[in-house]
Length: 271
Image (cartoon, rainbow, N blue to C red; front, side, top):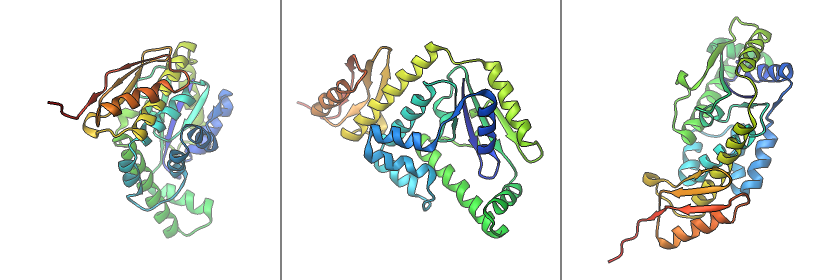
């Protein structure tokens, strides 16, 4: 089974994810694992991955992803790669967005009212109510900015989730049990679905590489589709015919790619 848990700071989402994982006998994806996977894909983009756990000034995420369009493709690849393992809980990182529409994936949002979250943060960190309130506001803005910059979606769109659980009055144990019941109802992730996740991970990894190494255009963004067994299709627009050729060479150089159908178009004009 694959569970994507999105949570607000102070909602007890991390604790609930861990408790649900223990009850189900599955693992929670650790931050260090995401960072290691990013490093294996691209050492420069690995630094961007670390922003998931770092408090940075407002607007930082928008500037990063405007400058480096490969970031969103890399993040999607890492999430698909984790999902391909099966029996995993992925906390945050836009996993509910990347995995939308995929079968046997439970997408959960854990929330709580602002004042309750402030009280919890103040108690946990040993800080004043005012300090905790500022922390929660800053954290909320930061995470919303990050996800919207990468995936261009609103985290408050409840259609992204199968369940939204409010921990204001519900005990942590009960919320974890609700998640477990729902996950068991969906059942295990099949080997066929794991293979689909692996195919999607490869496609997005190649897509990130092309976007990083080849000039592309947001209006006709490069997309990579994996038709199974490493058979890739490249679509979109790049700068010129040399870029078309380079994109194909980059795709063919990646482990797991067996063939490339290059349907990229160049924007240069010939007379």
